[in-house]
Length: 526
Figure 1 (tube, rainbow, N blue to C red):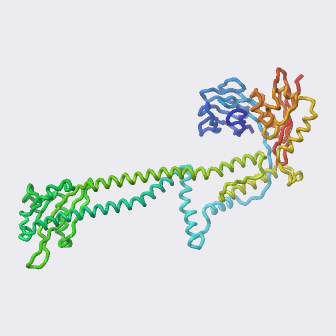
Figure 2 (cartoon, helix red, strand yellow):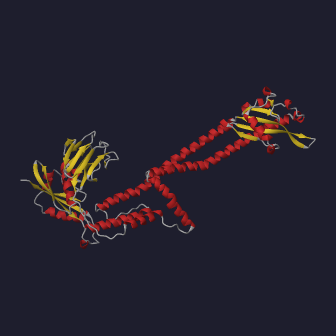
Figure 3 (cartoon, rainbow, N blue to C red):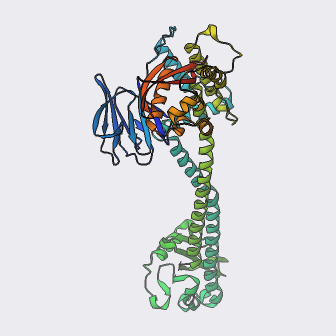
């Protein structure tokens, strides 16, 4: 198995496992290895693992691909080679796989799948009403949302539901208030139209009692345009226009007048004294009312005509514009608050997951025995318990149970101190690194050979204290090979201070199966 180790640059320390076949690398998320570093092309290079060897090829990148310091288009590579990218150095490392055979009896695969389906579908609904409501919500309604989640990312769904919440809330709260204000305004206009009809009846009592509608005075309506009266018609019961004078004795063809006349001519509506209101296009209103007089012979109110008024009230148009503006202002404000709410919920949920991921990586490297969190997220407790169980089983498979001391605390210092004792009696150049490949100590001979001063470099990573990236990459490769092979000694060669040296690396393994320190010695090549 090959892996790609970042030995220099922004992502230093990260590792990428290479699969058999093609492995594309670049800033594009579709690449097999997503390498988000400035200067790296969207599709920068490809690493192909075949039966006959390992090949690195450039994919037409802008800044080129370097293999061991030489720019290439396509070249064969091997374990230990360094790949140079903008702001990064990567190294190919071959890792011998540890095969662990575990014998375990399992139930029939179909039974396992059926059991999992039953769990995800919720099984039987509870008998209690409250429990059944929660069951229907979780396993029936939410199953639809989970189906959408298979097509869209969780954060997109959260944004959609936040926007829907803001829209529905504003519509259900502001909408009725705006509708009530419109209804109040409509009632005022209706009363105003009825007032005009009553005014005609009041100021023309004598003409109306004599049924001489042609003598009715409606001049006050002719000057009411500023009050929203667009047009009016006073007609008799046959539909003949009596006012305005310009249409005298004509039969009305105005749509508002005709509709109002037909409505009042209906026997069911013949004696209705209230005004009839029609909602017209463009925010206009049609108002019609019958004009009644008292008939002393019958002792009843008798209809003698119909007044139809077409209103274009500026107040209604202004109110509609104001209502629309108020609605959209409230909607925009809710969306802005929704964006803040989305950010809080998103990152509040993401933080425990990121912390869990980081702790899992530490656990796999042997720096942590269990995952835990100070953040209160009860729903993640089962996940943490399962991960802790998995880490414990991994440790059990990687170590000999007879050597385990439950009270032993796995820390670098215990093991590094052992290596320091070996360093004290060393005859040649020697340095000691901890599990993080930070320099703990080197003797005077090693200072002269490596060009590193302990007083200035103690506790720093080997990548940060060496002038030559190639030397640091060689040490890291040898350390990783030793750690991945149960502490087996690894050797390599490198030229230091103009002389060739054989470099030997031994790692001391902890009880959890991870390397806790590295003992590096340099032997002059004669």
